[in-house]
Image (spheres, rainbow, N blue to C red):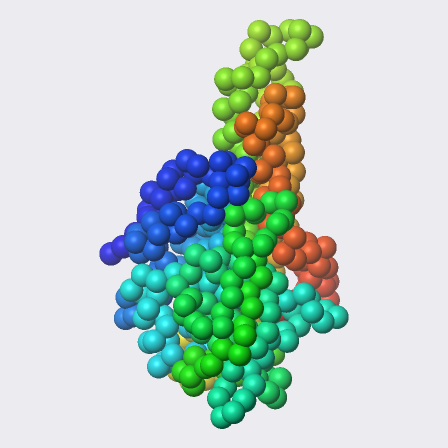
Length: 398
């Protein structure tokens, strides 16, 4: 049986080796994604009968902690691939699953073009299909398309002519598909999160997957997505911890007033490294705890779907519990990653700000990645559930 966590941990040193240089020079990790594809890691969550490993959500967390520590850019660029699998497993008909998850099980990399900048609220979708001269065409523009430049298959979130949600599956070489390398964020520089355009792309019926009733019903995919985000942030924190320990042991000089001859004996250096470790390990523990809740909810809901029944009350309860657990983990992972990334400079001093070391990438990556959604609303959701019994909103962020 394939050990997908082991694959990720084996790939991690190769990914980490040039991560700083890729960030500094904005070198996109095409070669890394070729290695990921050939390793078979992308099939981890695909059903076994379609060539995958059907691993647990806990294993997914371990995979992304390892990748996030090595290079959060690579981890984030692989994020849409794993979420595509969850959405297809939950929402697609068996023939569509066999077609697209079967391809993923055989080793292709997928990605997603979802977020737009238009509209009054986040999450509004204006990319759409239309009927022109007897053909069904896709039109629109996505502002964020993380990982699409590395992918063989791209899943596009759109709406049909009635305004109902659909997914459109596009091979990378599709005529009318334009992928732009224009992402210029201060962090996560090499995630290939640029604009994607759809210029009257002619579609066949099997490329269109209706989301059906799922758009307004609670499901586990949002929590699964948040689990990956949390894991990436924990990975960033663990990379900071390694750098802090290495620098304190090998480069930091003590102050005369400390009364010690080695920086590794300075009580304030010891305190800071201890604080970094405690914060990151606490977040890591909450992420692993949340992964168990997400796993229970995912298995229960997929079992409901397999039997053709509506979400049971028991499954609904598991979904709510998993969303609350992942909200708690998201708060811890977000705040620890940002905090420890700046505490690194309290260990290393001015020398650690020099460009050749590029330690600022940890903070830039953490701050950029954690803007996906607001932790303030996580606090609110947790409090509202504990005090008033109100379940969290039905959105992709829970």
